[in-house]
Each structure stands twice: as C-alpha cells, then as structure tokens.
Length: 57
Image (cartoon, rainbow, N blue to C red; front, side):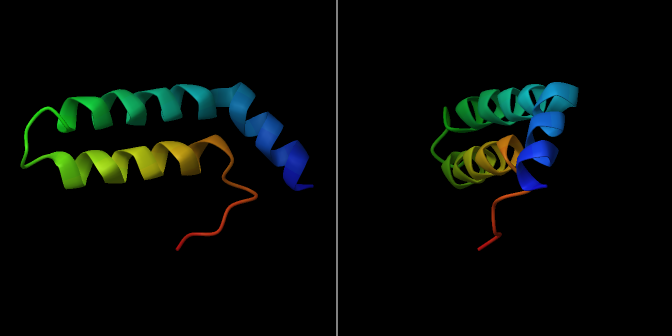
C-alpha cells in the first residue's frame, strides 16, 4: 500500500512540491541567517517525495 501511495503522490504533485521546497531551500541558504530555514526546506523536500514510507523525527 505504501508503494502505491508514493507513486500516486509523485504523479499528482509530490515531485513539484519537492522541487519547490528545494528551490526555496537554496534561496534561503544565500543569507547566513537563512541557513537553518534552508536546511528545514531540504528536509521537507525529502519528506514530500515519499511521504507514505517515512517517519517524522
């Protein structure tokens, strides 16, 4: 069930969501003050790729 959910998620917008978080993370890392926010955007991008098989820590 997790595999099917992840495939459907990627097809219907998960890939675009992850790309958006990744770009925002890069933009946030330009400034020294934004690096913690950029790191969080990278974590959210990873989580938004395969949300049905990951655990939030």
